[in-house]
Length: 397
Image (cartoon, rainbow, N blue to C red; front, side, top):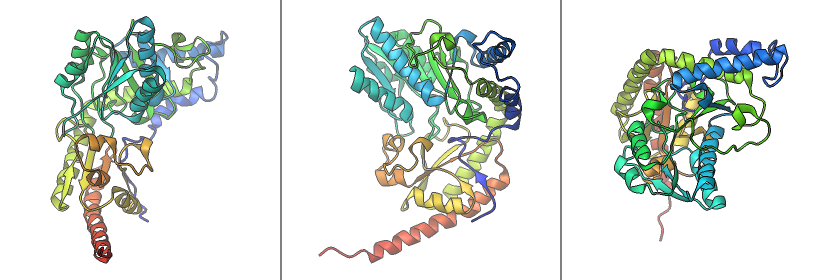
């Protein structure tokens, strides 16, 4: 087991920035009041909550009243899909949803819930071989009874960046609200909601060096939203429950730092990503890049290797101190091929032979050099083992 650690799984989670922890600590110790309380400790907590909401609103280009703090990305997504769809159903005969075929399972399973338990009809929007939604396909799928469209800003597995502003314009012309899962986008892409033309946008703090267990949903003023957690009047009656003040302060601090760092960090990470991809494709025969080479997140490199199982390669990489993944962390341990890679047209065995490397701003040239020295021999070793196993297979009579 190597003592060295090269962390290339930033799409799964990111380390907490020390400056974020510093901002949070007072609200875990002396400023422990409930923001709904009227005494001085409660007022201090409420002020921190208001300040954090203002910070986030400035980055999103929205009103502070349009920011709802949640317990993470999956909750934000569920609130958007179920809250918007059911609110539109109550207001009229809206019973149709459109989601892209490569959405995170939080979106797909929320849509499935609405289909199974509330009778919504769900259209899965296909993507091309690069993972891009075709605007004409969205235009053709829209109907007068479409309650909501959900297309992710950037894919968590292959990093493909969707033309959200163009899709948003199409939805507005048709009168259908658009939700985007922007969980992977913070710190890498602009988040101005007016430019993106979205009605709902989901984020979670731990993807941009903030704490786990806290997220947000932007909901455009006037956009319908039915609360999914009932109880108190927190978050303007849209999400009940005592707010996680320390986590929310951490989210706002992390998002601010990510936005400040974005112009330089994105280019630096992209350059390292390109070196990694070029190096692997040159050194490893029968390897390929999944997703669009240009329209992708700066730190995403989803690489396929013929003749091996991605899980086996991940175990050997881990022994060498290299942390990567086979796709979404939320489906870790699943034996099923990635639905994202299958949607691109890959065969199941090709999908199972793919590994996701996701870089962050702390990755160095030396880290990439180490990966390029380590990875090719491991692939060759696994292929040799697979070839030996195939030779020993008995021939059927």
